[in-house]
Every structure is written in C-alpha cells, then in structure tokens.
Amino acid sequence: MALKVARRSRIAPFVAMEVLRAANERQAAGEHITHLEIGEPGAGAPAPVIEAARQALGTARIGYTEALGLGSLRQRIARHYGESYGVAADPARIAVTTGSSGAFLLAFLAAFDVGDRVALAAPGYPAYRNILTALGIEPVLLPSGTQSRFQPSVELLRRVEGRLDGLIVASPSNPAGTMLEESDLRQLAAHCRERGIRLVSDEIYHGITYERRAATMLDIEPEALIVNSFSKYYAMTGWRLGWLVVPGDLLRAVESLAQNLFISPPALSQLAAGVAFDCRAELDGYVARYRSNRDLLLGELPKAGFDDFAPADGAFYLYADVSRLTNDSDAFCRRMLAETGVATTPGRDFDPERGHHFLRFSFAGSSADMAEAARRLIAWRR
Ligand SMILES: Cc1ncc(COP(=O)(O)O)c(C=O)c1O
Image (tube, rainbow, N blue to C red; front, side):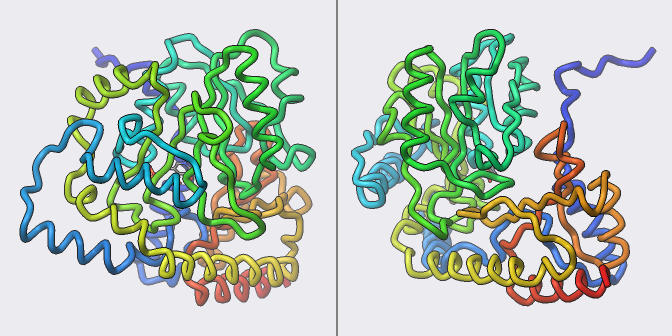
C-alpha cells in the first residue's frame, strides 16, 4: 500500500531553482551558460565579513546562540535603522533568522491561523504563496499590472471578496523591481490598520534602488512585521541570515517558534554579519554594477524583440511582457536555454494566471555575462 504524502506538501516548485538545475546540467556537460535566471548577487560577501568569519573561526566557539540571535547583532541591526532611515528600532524586537525565508515561516506561523487569508500581488515572489499554502493559509492573489506598477493597491484590496487577515508588500519587488511611493505605502498601511489586517513588509531589496531610496514600513506602521536579509544588498546568500522586526504582541510567539523550529540562526554567520553594515562603499559598488547591467539590457534587449518591461526602480530584475513573442513562456525559456545557453525564468513562477506571457531576466550577475547574453539573444532573434 502506498504510504501517505501530506496534502500540505503539494506546493508548486520554485521554477527559478528548477531552471538553475537544468542550466547547471548543461554547464556540466560543457556548454557555456549565461545565468540570468537566478536572483543572486554575482559577487560574494564583502571582504571584511569574510575576515570577521575567519577570525571568529579561530577564536570563538561556534555553538548555538539565543533563538532570537546574538545580542550584539540585534543591536547592530537596530542601529542600522537609525543610520539608514532615521528610525528608532528596539533591539529587543529584532529576531535574527535563517535568511528572510526563515523569517517568513516565523512571521506567518506567529500571525496567521490555518484558514486565514493573506493578500499579495501577482506577480510576486513565489515562496510567499507556497509557504502560505504549506501552512494552510490561503494566498489571495491581487492581479496587478502596469496600472498599479505590479504592486498591491488599496483599489485592488477593495475588490477582494471576503475578509482578509494579512497583506504582504515588497518594494522593490521581485520579479518586477517596481517600488511603491511612500504615499502608497501609507495608504496601504492605513487601509490595513482600519480593517485589522496584519501587514508584512519584505524589505530584502532595500539598498538596491536606482531612482530613489526605499522607505521602511517600520517608519509608517510600527505594528507591521518587517522582513529583511543579508542575502541581496549585502550579497551574502549562502550565509543564510536575515531578520524580522517583530511587533510587541508577536514577540513571545516568534521566540518560542524560533526556539523549536531552528534553535538558533547560524552562529558563524551571525558573528561575521555585523560588519556588513560598515561596508557601504563596497556594497554600493555592487549596486553600481547592477545599474550598468540594467542599462545595458534595457539598451540591447529591444534589439532582440524584448521591449516591454516593468519599470525596474530597484532589485536586479527585468520583468518582460513577451506576449508578442509567445503564449507559453515556459516553453520559450526552455527553447532559449537549449538554443542560446541563456537561462531566464518563466513568469509562471511569479504569477500562475498571467505568467505565461512574462519572462524574468536577472541582472545580478557579471557585466560580461549580461553583454554575452544580449549578444546571443540578438543573434538568436535575427
Ligand atoms: C522578494 C524576496 N524575498 C525573500 C527572498 C529569500 O531570500 P533569503 O531567504 O535568502 O533571505 C528572496 C530571494 O530571492 C526574494 O526575492
């Protein structure tokens, strides 16, 4: 008799990771692949972080830490809010987590029950919807396009039938890279406050912005759950470290959940990560490279027929409407990878309904890879 596989585990795969696997298989077979599929900074952690980790390995015991993280790191993160946004943050309300992915799990478990309904923009980062689903929480997709800059809006929220328990916002967002104006964030926060909707703000792409600085929701709605990470601006994906600013009423729940689910976030990463906040020059250099990659692609890709992009205010993605080229961006991506060696992510990952008309190019990699990808795509589409 077949053994049971839990229904809750039947969530969609993260297609970008599956494309990465297919691309890596081709690479292992000797093909030269340009990686525009994965949202991972091409450069590694700043040099002082690596040095701090080396020193910690030699001098510190790499054991468990408190479940909410090392006090010194929590304090440093709190200071970052003062330095970067002019906002006071209480270190006691900061939970260090295993990437922002760990923060989402803690936030959703602490704030929502099975059967609760949480709104989020489609297109959006697929793990929001997939983690919610695995936890028995219903993701309510807000179909957002150019009119709302691929972001949630009060108007879209008003169109939702039935009650809502939560809203996730991300500015800049993945995959569109668009940002909400501070006034839009305020409107969303006011709407949620009036209706008792918990607000979760994913601020993982803060620092990677091209037009204006991002405002933190902590400044606008102190009761919101703020999620952030060392993965993107700080270029520390593999260190698996993020954080959550927790509202007072959820603090005890988050701590108990963290103790039981993770015991503690990775100690070595915690010992090294604090210095990342003092590496602005190096990290802003990475952002300058993302900007020039973005400009290169925006200049070159139209020559290959890709010319309809969401305005990439931040993050490192171009979300392209490819409906003039295909009705099936999955098949299109596979063919592109096979025929040109350029790996991208089909929109279905981000929007199950309309994603088949979209493609995401990630420009987090090297400038040489961007130029090579553009050259290959132009030759392909001739
Ligand atoms: C919008 C967004 N949030 C969260 C994450 C997860 O990042 P991590 O768990 O590495 O902090 C990603 C990764 O791509 C992302 O794009």
